[in-house]
Length: 193
DNA sequence: CTAAAGATGTCCT
DNA sequence: GGACATCTTTAGA
Image 1 (tube, protein in one colour):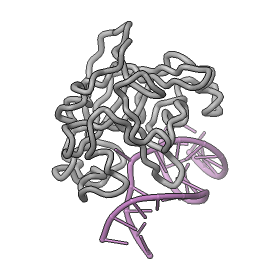
Image 2 (cartoon, protein in one colour):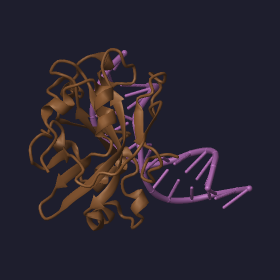
Image 3 (cartoon, helix red, strand yellow):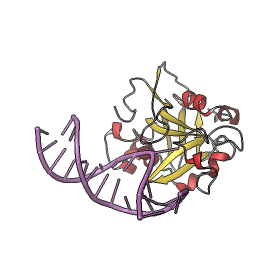
Image 4 (tube, protein in one colour):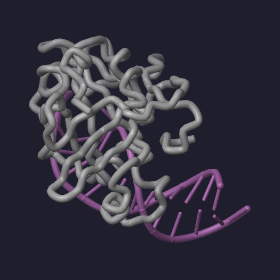
């Protein structure tokens, strides 16, 4: 399956977050390929969004959010965790979608080894968990997701029907009025309860 | 099972 | 110097 085109990402961030649900994240390592279905995502925009890193304007850390759409924005937080976003909106306009949870499909053995657990449900049901399972670190910050490289996103070749639910975003203090967290209803790999 | 606390680096004021 | 888009471990019911 070919990676999603740049035009997919070059739209309103909330719309992209919705449509990323059910898509497949692909991570290519030296001798392994990891695949998983995106089951939870959050939208973060710019000056209109107090919860966003880009709210304060362009800085060294968040500059990827202002760059071209369809790139990975990886940042380090809480002193020990990485989180994976994909950039959205046209160049110059900040936007990113945080991938919060993934349903493992392929390479589960390798994920278990990386995560140090054999409980499938705990492999990638949270933003920092999935980056560890998928070996995503700062080295992938700014990586182009529209080519078949180390990391990209494709359509699911075995799609199943699902319904989308939305709530306020998690772990933030500002922008709680915006229901910009989206997840697949009833999916056991969604974080929280 | 739930609740509480600790770990820990980087960014921004 | 304080806050942080989190997870794990430990203690207790």
